[in-house]
Image 1: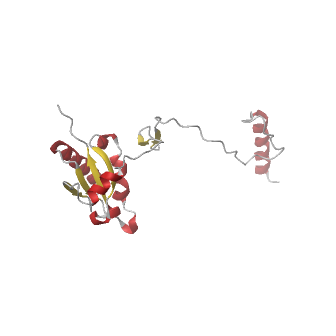
Image 2: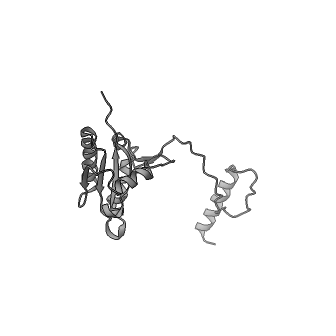
Image 3: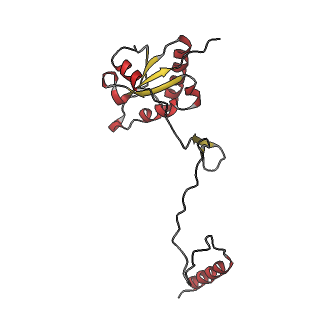
Length: 179
């Protein structure tokens, strides 16, 4: 054995002697380090506790996502009425070619204007992206579930094929509160 291996084994023996076992019902193997990790059941998450993802080297949250993520989707009756033309699309927003920052700002402003002018049904065109994996296509539904957007949006759903299919969303705008 090399001198380095002997030092490592000596160090390991010291660690073994001073370490306290995590699980008392588990026997420690003799002479060899335990490299198998026992998987533990995840802690139960309460419905209202947000999961925070922290940016490396800072304490600033990158995003905060509810573990019980439930998007606010339109009901089937409303979707059917929009796709058959019984509820008219009162405004359209095309986000093609925008960056995420531009699209985020434009969508929030557009929703706010629709809310203030009483427009209830809008079509947001995101495009499908390369191979159907467009960045805006996946980002817009997440944005619509953010508190700033939920102030104006009552729900959303993928558009029917006649309005752009998976590259567009129907968004139902909340009614403006009187007063």
